[in-house]
Image (cartoon, rainbow, N blue to C red; front, side, top):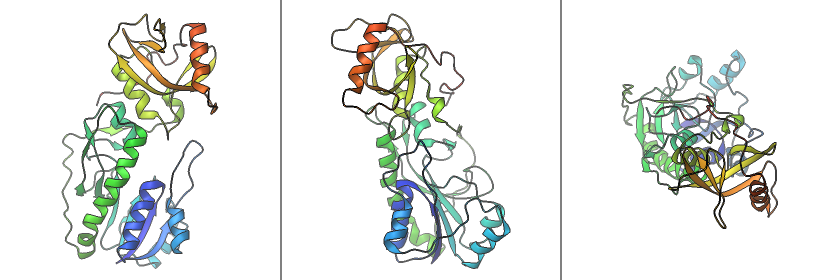
Length: 316
């Protein structure tokens, strides 16, 4: 089967390997570089270089030349995994076997942006990749298959990303033969139970200490590494909070340090969270957390940036 593959990040790299190792003819690969605030452990560009795969220039396919180049490759199928742009109707019409992608949530849940982050922020009980056909909507096309997995309190953005890579590559391996043969399932999305994740920017990560401990916990773990992290301010300096855990004790007020020997316990709503890892922005020194702890004990509270912020978790 002649395949055009568009992708990025670890999930794109693993899925491109699945297609290549299955013996399909990859006639063109589209890729893009990580953004300023992104940290990828792998990327499709490595697979392209290692296996001498042909590349294509088109990204958003907004020009006639880009669409003509894609059509000239005569792809039977197009796979876009780790791709950020909606494919225009002219592209969707080219491959006879369709254009498909893998979304990092259990569609129709969390259509749209940042499904890894929103699944944790919204305290979803489970998530997983969905292999689906593209249409002209946003993640609304027919579903081929899914691989659900439960989320636990031990999960954070890093673990969920890794679990999605493993599940997505297995999902594609399972259904790739059926896609080639034209026998893969097509399950229409009715829209029942649908939800959407809005686009996120690093500056949207401000912590609202007025939230309850569970919400702050989900906020922090949903934005932690490899993402830029949830943040607050201390004496005018930005502090990135990488890991917290909720506690049952009552707090002294939102963002206020509670007296607790040997622990960094801060008010969240009327409760508390324990800060387990934090650093000043761009501070990667071995004692970064100790510096924050020392200064917080000196000042006694975080600046309450983000209180009542519209960037807070919307209803799921």
